[in-house]
Every structure is written in C-alpha cells, then in structure tokens.
Image (tube, helix red, strand yellow):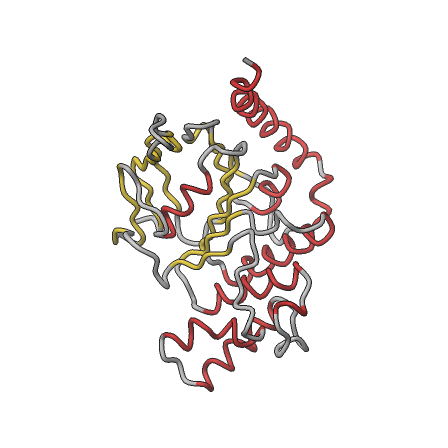
Length: 263
C-alpha cells in the first residue's frame, strides 16, 4: 500500500459577501509510495498549496479523502511534518529549543532530546548556533531550523509548501542541495510544492503538474536523474529535456490562469 493516497479530493470555498463559491481543486487522486520525493508544480492559484494543507490536516476537503498508511487524515498529526514558506519558528525559543519542541510535547527524555537535536543540527549545518534565537539568524538558517524541527519528530511524510520561495537565488540553490542530501541519506517520503520548474526537476523523483484553477492533475513526469545529484546536473542535456517538457506544460496552464484578466 502506498504511504499516501489522495482519493478524489476536491475543495470549494464559500463565496465572499454573497459572491459565487470558488472551486480551488477538482476531484484529484494521487498515490505516493514510501521514500518517494514528489514535487507538485503548477501556476499560481492552482490549488497546490490547498492540496498540501488538506494532506497536512490543516484544511478539510469538500469531497474525497486522504489516507496515510491506510488511516484517514482528519486533523494535523505528528506523522506529518510541515514546513511553510514563512519562517514559523517560535521567536522566544533558541534553535535547539525549537527543534526539541515536538519532542518535549510527546515526553521524550532530555537526554534523547539532546541527542536528536544534535543529530539534526549537524545535518542542517547549524553547529555553533544552537543557542541563537530566530531574530539572530538569516532566512536560510531559519528554514534550516524549521526543516530540522520537522525531521526531529520522525514523521512518516515531510510536507513542504514552497519552503525556499522567500530566499535569494544563491541561498535557495544551497537549500535545495541541503534538503536533497538529507533525503538521499534518510529516504523520508516527501511532498514538495513549488512553482519553480528547475527546482522541481532537481529535487524530485516524480513531478506532478497541476492545471490552472480549478486545479487537477494534468500530467506526471518521472525524473530519471541518478543519485546522489550534484548541482551541475542542472546544465546537463537530460535536465534540459525535462525542463523544456515542463515549461511547455506550465506555459499552457499559466496562460489559462491570466486569460480572464485580458477580457
């Protein structure tokens, strides 16, 4: 059985001030197997973040259901680790304390907390910053802390909603390499939302393309690039072929998304 099963999930939001309802997602199905790294790609407003929030248990589908290891998802849970685009650290806690937050909540001993925190602080390259507060960190360092906090809880699946979208290009590239290296060593199941085609190809085993709103899955593209992946693969002929295929798919949907504004 797949780790994650999204079965005919749709989402419609009520109208604002008596206006018509908004169909964000049409009935959509997707299966994600254990240890897959899946990127969901699509134009702005296509419902990809809404779909991720439903998987996280932060939103409720209008129809359909989500199963994780066969169990229905109805609310947030420790079996799903979520990382948002915005920096969602607790500002009054240090890096180490933020990473340990979920561990403390479930009653882990201090010794175990320290062991797990040290492991992931090393993984994300924040050695020496254990006792720094978020306001003392760069954006990239804050996201590294958020990723470490999510992984420290040992979730079945890691959910990331455009986690590098607010970073500058160079930091974003480095964060892509960091997260991919962690996945290559730990093989967590990952569902990663992005609007960046190059990012999707570099990170994923499989790219899911969504249509313009109301969103649905339009295409799936396997990424046969080998692991470990080095950043220089982005200049390879194989990468360029995948990039061209996805640009064509996304361009069609992006044009649909802006067409009403032209009328």
